[in-house]
Amino acid sequence: MKLKLFFAIVDKNKAEKVIAALQKCGLNHPQAALGTGTAPSALSELFGTGETEKVVVLGTAEESVVPALYDVLREKFAFEEKNTGIAFTVPVKSVGGPATLALLAGSIAAGGEV
View (cartoon, rainbow, N blue to C red):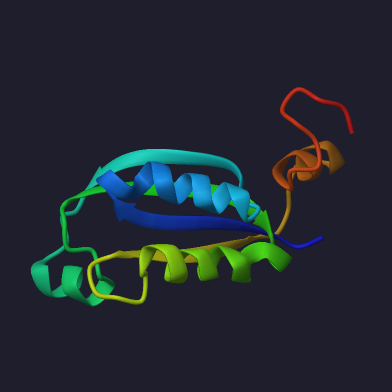
């Protein structure tokens, strides 16, 4: 099983809807952190992050569901348009044992058994 850490940076007013849609597509253990953009305007335009109040959404997903996560961001939230957000993944190369892997992959609930 290949696991990815999935990140999406979205406008604060869209965060709850984005999280709900991503969970339906297979994002596990979503977390959200408030953020404020500080990049110069040219860099902000390049990354498509126009507003300054942002939410960084992160969670884990099996590699096989990552394309569906990107699809929902494009189709429901127009992520291909300028100033709508940015998303990316980071591979998870190792974790501390099979129970941790199962938890991060969504195979068991927090506090459950393998």
